[in-house]
Image (cartoon, rainbow, N blue to C red; front, side, top):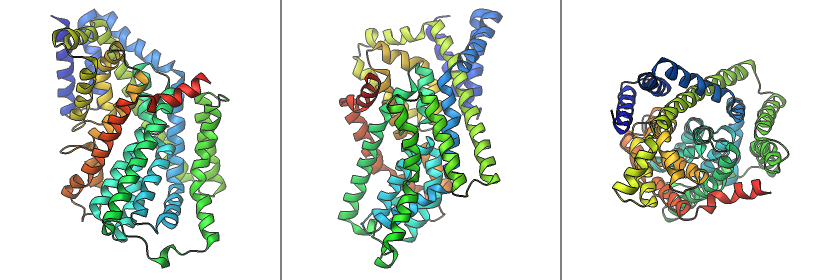
Length: 441
């Protein structure tokens, strides 16, 4: 049987299993090991899975994963994120759209604490959404703000998704995280600019707070500022030593986790319940990602053995005559299509064995491509009709916000993200400047 046909059968079998509701790692790992057994017999098939597991266990940077997840859960479960929103409420409430702008700021800081978009969505929907609706903000505006802001969680470091990309693409996690900093902040700034312009043109979309709500004593304002900026201090304590080369990435992740834990203890918020919830959630998320990485490595090993990557490259470049940029754009469009029914990790695991080596063979930088992939998946699971984030938002939103409202809310922010993606594709140094500066230093 031709290798191309084997590759197509593997993909179609995997997609069929996913459509039946199987877990992502189970479907991918099963297809990988069964294909290896059929192709290379008992010894080759078993060795493939065992070898993938050993590579995973020996990958030292993977230790950052539980550290950052624990840090994020400690800060969110201990309600330190609530202090952030109170700070934005007081300091930004006097502007038209000020609370929506503050919500984007909240999402950026939550992203820097957690690295998961679901966490940002949950915090935004439970803390910010009720406050924005109560103060007369347009419901389409606020649902779009929360969905767009939460998407920053997989781009702003410490992004858990970029850890997964690093493992599959065999790229340094530290460089990928640094590559996400400037694009993530640029996208947040573009969201803020859009909100400010829309609310200036139409103040009814985001009315300013009445004077009695924002006129608080200066001492109370400064106290809220200190409490709200505390997570920034934790992030700085973790990242400054790493950027200056004083600590490794794993050591910095441990500093972040310990600092967050110490802050929660000193503020009297580290209860037994908070600690138990944080540890259980950390264990669950970490194990899920480890299983996904293991399945992806096994699947990738089969494709390496088949030579499928070379076959796909020849199909695009020789038979179809496409240039590298056309191939890259087709890849990005395929992510948007898959995002209608898959989440970001599933998309990466399914196509990474083909796309990542192909991108390298076409002469593109894999660190830069990691940022492009992340932004594209952000767009993908906010795009109707079946965007992943759209249904998460519907599950968390109050009854008065309909699915039609949610669909209508996201289009302007998707256009902003497409503009950001185009800018980064045109000017790769936006993503590559910071990692090159830090690592060359």
